Length: 361
Image 1 (cartoon, one colour):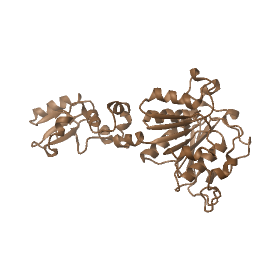
Image 2: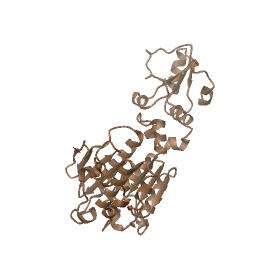
Image 3: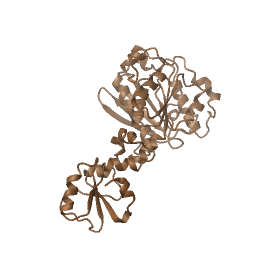
Image 4: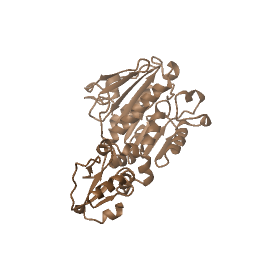
């Protein structure tokens, strides 16, 4: 029986029977469907049509025959649960259903969650070691609009960790190079390239256009600029830092939790803390940490799970030890979100964000 025929029937005249695994059923099923594992000890109402479905409409056929022998008015759902998903989603195409199937079947996502991702926008500041996995995984997940900002050009030394780029794009702007890669991965999303640095002059204008911000930079001036702009604009963002075999991640949600400046307070003096181009970094650590940032963005968009708010996740790649440092209370003396904030406008604080040597990871 097809979805179209069922749509013309009275809802009281039939019931759905889901014969997929219990786990698949728990992750998502047709509303009010009964789960059946094929056992003989279940009884269905004889006064209703029984519509049996599996994932694709093939594995359910033997069970339909089994119920027919027991005297039921039973039918197989043509195309199975996948066809039902396609028919009941006017905003997702057949191709999108197939592309995102492995996450749509998750209980926490489903069609509704996939539409949230499709309608969301994320700005990634930095198309390097951190920005690469973030961009690839967000594009793969179907985040509808992705912005990528980076003024640097691709060099051969980047390719050890910046996996979104390749040798063919050496010399090309990183934001443009990343855009090309994402379009090849997923041509159903919108990708915007910003081939320049984030500054006090453009920060509020660009950040205000996005739902979630990713800090994938490796200089403190830009990190503080991202934080301050997001706090003032009430935009959530995810910070990360990497060096050697170590990395850290934290997420900020407006007004509820400590911001980056609450914890680190002031921009360190120039050259007191080396960036990864000076100190070194193993690419796999950038991949792990960037992937966590992508997951934080996805969780925020979907409204699921527990975010790294009020805490910093820290990983040591050499020992594979992880820990979480908690910062649950906002800093009352914070210059941007404290009780008496000194930073009320990014432009007024522009000099603090001036980067002497600005190289993104």
